[in-house]
Amino acid sequence: MKSVIDAGLVQDQNAKLDANLQADYDALGGVLSRRGVDIDKLTALAQTFAVAVPSWGAGTGGTRFARFPGRGEPRNVFEKMEDCAVINQLTRATPAVSLHFPWDKPSDVQELRGSAEELGLGFDAVNSNTFQDQVGQEHTYKYGSLTSMNAAARAQAVAHNIECIELGQALGSKALTVWVGDGANFPGQSNLRGALERYLDSMRSIYAALPDDWNIFIEHKLFEPAFYATTIADWGTSFACATTLGPKAKCLVDLGHHAPNTNIEMIVARLAQFGKLGGFHFNDSKYGDDDLDSGSINPFQLFLVFNELADAALREGAAFKPAYMLDQSHNVTDPIESLMSSAVEVQRAFVQSALVDRAELASLQEQNDVLQAAQCLKRAFRTDVGPILAMARVRSGGAADPVAAYRASGYRDRVASVRPAKAGASSSGIV
Ligand code: PSV
Ligand code: MN
Image (tube, rainbow, N blue to C red; front, side, top):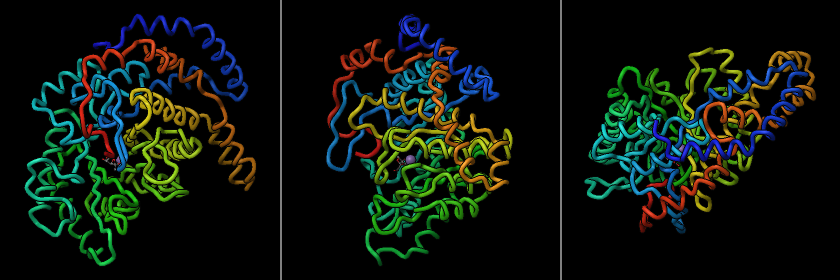
C-alpha cells in the first residue's frame, strides 16, 4: 500500500505523544475496569470502525452566495483519491470513498480502480446526480428529473442512474444512493401524488438494473431546492417507496435533512426495526442542511443515533450493517482536516455507544427509574474515550493526533504547489 504521507514522519509524531497517551490510556483503563469494561476490547472494537469519505468533500464547498476556493484543491477524481488516502492513512477509519457521478466519472474506470487499490482504498455507495444539468445534456432537470412531466427527461435520468450502477460495478461498489431535489416551489406547480407516481415508475426501472448483490438507497430531504414541496421529503415517504420497490431498496438518513429538533434517533430505530435502514450521510447542522462537520454542533444527537445502532446490532446480529458515509461541505476549513476530525467524531460516538451498560439500562427502564436511565446514557456519553481512539489509530498504523501529523507533513503546501487554483465550481457539493 502506497503511503501518501511519509510513514516515518507519522511514527516520529506518534513517538512524541507516546508517553502521555500511554498514561492517559492507563488511567482510563483503570476507570473503565471499575465499571467492568476491558479497555483493550473497546480499543479493538474501535479499530473495526469505518466510515466512508465523500469524494466531493475533498474540495472546498460553497453556498448559494459564493465559493471561496482553498489551496491545492483536487482537480480530478485521482487527486480526490489521494486526499482521501491521507485521511485514511492518518485516521485508519476511512478505508472507502463514496463517488458522485458525473463529477467523478473517470475516462478509464480500471485505472481508477487500480489507483484506489494502490492507495489501499475501496468504494462505498456511488451517487447519481440529476439535480444539475450537465454540459451538453439533452433534456433539462429544471422542472424535475425522475419525476419530470417530460418522459424524455425521466428516461435520461433513469439512464444516468443505470450508468452509475455500471460504473460502480466496475469499481467494486455495492450500492447506489439516489437523492433528487425534485419537487415544487409553488402550490399548484405540481400534482403531489402524480409526482410520486412518476418517481416510483422511474425508480422501478433503476431497481430492475440492480445486480443481485446491490442495494439502492433512497435519500430523503425536507426541502431545498424545492422550497414548497419536495417529492422525497421525509423518512415516511422514503420508507413507503423502499417498501414498494422491494428488498434491495433501503432508506438513507442524512442527518442534516430534517427539520430542526426532529428526533433522528427515533427515525433510525424505526427504520432498523422494519429492516429498511440502508445507511447514513453523517454531518451536523444548526438550521437546515448545513453540512457542517460531524459532531461539531450536536454530539449528543450523534451519540443517541449510535445508541440506537448498538441496540439494533444486538437485536439483528451480523446481518445489520448500514453503510456509514460522511456528507459535508467545508467552506472555511481545510477539507482534509475537517474530514479527519469528523471521522473521529463519528467513531467517538460509536465507541461511547458501546460503553452503554445495556443490561443496566433495560433493568432501569423496567423499573421506570427514569432519572437513572437517563444517567446511564449520560455516563457513557460523558466518558472521554479520546485515549481509546488515539490508541486504536496508533495500533492500526495511523496517527495519534491526525491533524497535528497532517500539519507537520506539509501536505497542503506540497499539493498547492502542483495543483493550481481552478476557477469556478469544484464538484464539491453545494456550489
Ligand atoms: C443533498 O443535499 C445531498 O445530501 C445528497 O447526498 C447529494 O448527493 C449531496 O448532498 C451532494 O450535493
Ligand atoms: Mn447527503
